[in-house]
Image (cartoon, rainbow, N blue to C red):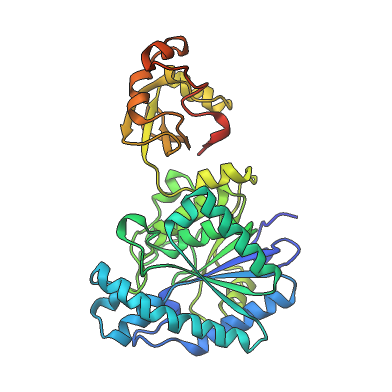
Amino acid sequence: MKISQLAHLTDAATCSRLVVKVGSALLVGKDGQPRREWLAALVAEIAAMRARGQEVIVVSSGAIALGARKLGLAKGGRGSLSDAQAAAAVGQIALAGLWAELLAGHGITAAQVLLTLEDLEDRRRYLNVTATMGTLLAAGAVPVINENDTVATQEIRFGDNDRLAARVGQAAGAKGVLLLSDIDGLYDRDPRQPGAVRIPVVKGVTPEIHAMATGGSSSGLGSGGMTSKLQAAEIAEMAGIALAIIDGQPLSPVQAALGADRGTLFLPRGRKQARKAWLGGKLRVRGAVHVDAGAAAALAKGSSLLAAGVTAVDGDFRRGDAVEVQGPDGATLARGLSEYDAAECARVMGRQSAEHEEILGYAPRSALIHRDQMVLI
């Protein structure tokens, strides 16, 4: 049975493993104090999910907001990178303690997991996260995950926990991701505008869907907005994971939203092979290759990318780096691991395979990007 409606996300038969993401504005009040009553009600809901046979992973924001108050930092600790790192170092202790205390009240062990972008972008480290997550869940713990903001820099960070939640769901083999937000779903325009209509179900994140999004977080505490949630939905749908956005503000928010069928559910595509799902969800690429119409048509049929169809090369990437494949109109068609450095790609682009050995000075590889190392977007 597939997930086709919001209520299926809390049904162990359709969603055996669920990721629940909690934003800063929900967990921390404007006074910088944790909203204990609200969080206790959510923890009770998580305990009820587990009692029904679901495994639950929590992705929790809030460390920077909590730490900023303790350190007396302006702008919620987000005035500078060093402020955010310092606030996270202090606040993460309080955040982990809060989750551990409240989950323990239901006889549940909490496990803190701090991740950086590289932990999920590097294949070996990604597999290690997968193994750790599986072990924790098998032991009956609830992993409580956050980005490791104390060491992450602007260049190597997720920047929001929406996309982190989707990547964690992918690594953990989850069936669903539930984003608790300060809005009850995706609207066809800014929800503050008259006549704005909520979209209950989305079958594929298209450019038209992206056009509906607004970028900023209304609370001023978080770092994500609707744009980041749509990016998370794209990562999830490619991995065969259903993702929903619901209003997290009421007490017992999951029951309130799912009981009223109020939110936006992004339906998954068919689950891809694990390696291709990981490739499709990568957030950082090192460059791009542009292809002609003939190569684009061949890719759509499942072919590898040959250099003959490449018209331009962007970026300074090395063999094994992730690159985007862009069509004649500039749209991203695929993402894959390059078999050549950028300079080598530039030398052989537009040339037939029989010419490559003479150009490169060594026996060429079978393709610029092999189909086994590429996923269509």
